[in-house]
Amino acid sequence: MIKGIFKKTKYVTTSIPAQEKVPTPIIPDGMWIKCNSCDQIVYKKDIEENNRVCPYCGFHFRMNARERIKLIVDEGTFKELDSNLLTLNPLDFPNYEDKIRQQEEKTGIKEAVITGIGRIYGEEAVIAVMDCFFLMGSMGSVVGEKITRAVEEATIRRLPVIIFCASGGARMQEGIFSLMQMAKTAGAIARHAEEGLLYISVLTDPTTGGVTASFAMLGDIIIAEPGALIGFAGSRVIEQTIRQKLPEGFQRAEFLLEHGFIDKIIKREEIKKTLGKLLYLHKEVK
Image 1 (tube, helix red, strand yellow):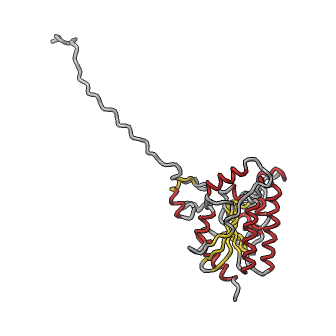
Image 2: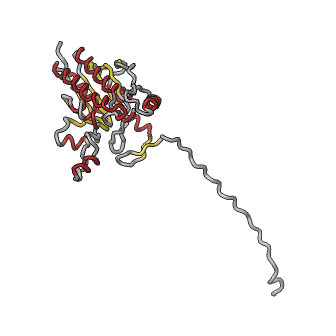
Image 3: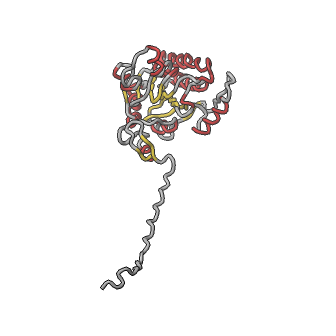
């Protein structure tokens, strides 16, 4: 009965193959974008097809100058002005020329503004579009000169002017030469106004510094995009100066509209239609 009770028994084990490792998917950089407002992860192509507006919350991402011209100007009607103007280094600021070349390669444009004549729903206008991706749209000598020439061309042709503002302010590498552009552009706008001609200023994110203190705020009609940062000095600078906490949303388009600083906030999808109506209502009868 007990024979063989202590006999060693051989057990046959079967090896279970290790689970195959699932390869990590390779996602190219820049395919997805995180919305700055709602924190949703959005497919980049969806943003681009929606005029760079978040499909979840309506947040307006920044646009470059070429994208904006394509958005608002009738196809095939835009004729660029003064595209040959080049930036110099009047103060011999270190590495300034290298920075300009890098920005040209990065953005595909020569300076932080594109000016030209085009049509919006058939209505002709002189249009200037600033590009915040070129040295944050800072206003140097060439930017001021191009805007001034564009306004003067509009005065000669008796055309309305539309300027899309997007700037961090004066360009520090050009010092006083940059600050002089404030008076020069404002003077051109004043002469244009004396002729009884229309100037529409469109404030986009960001519009700050010397641009705010000059031509951006001189429009007969001042429009802003939703959520655009608009102001002169930064909020932290103001708080440190006055030693007070600023109100919630200070320097945003909605706050400025509530306090009478701008005339209207227009969503990007409606901006072309709005500009077309304004140009039609204010056009000269010839």
